[in-house]
Amino acid sequence: MPFSAATDGFRLAYDRSGQGPPVLLLHGWPGERGDYREIVPQLAGLDVIAPDLRGFGESDKPLEDPATAYSAAAQARSLIALIEELHLDGLVIAGYDIGSRIAQAVAAERPGLLRGLVVAPPLPGIGARILSAPAQREFWYQPFHQLDLAEQLIDGRPDAVRAYLAHFWSHWSGPEFELSHAELDRVAGLYSAPGAFVASIDVQNVSHSIPEGSPHRPDRIARSRAGLAL
Figure 1: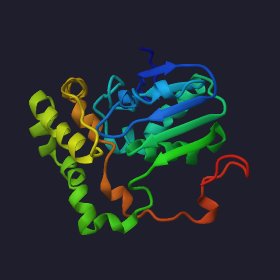
Figure 2: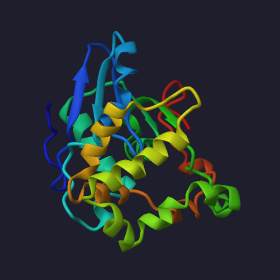
Figure 3: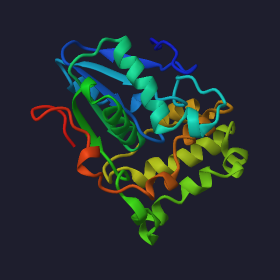
């Protein structure tokens, strides 16, 4: 398993397979690069790179101020450095959940690096609607993650980590999907080392969504008429 060169003191673990036009796959929470294990084999004829984001999986997760070290902008810096390190030309980035937000941060910062952007964004642009009762029933965990109590109850406790992650994999998955016990054990193991759970939640903060709305036209991501445009 290769690691990227360090950016801001963070190295990213990543998998790479295949040959052809490059595709960068960004996972969400609670996940890691293995989330794409069933998709990668279907991307024949492509150069597929799936990294663990900062603070996730086997990537570096030092104790740093989350506002600066684990923000979408900070995550984007690591990914831009990885893209340039691997000389990925004509890149498509695909992401879901927080991977969607981070993919958009990469595109906004360096649109010329991308040929396309594929996102499944449950939040970006939601604005004050995040405070509605139906939304808060789903996103209760984000305010909880801002409390020291989250670390005290869950971080470094394998049984608590497993039970907590099992709730989200069960609650958020489609009706035909069930995460196997072996796979849940593997993912929980990645989140169970002391500090790993806290690092993974540092990128989440529902308050970031409140001021968001549709961007003014001059602020929209645009590369060219034939290329990337959002």
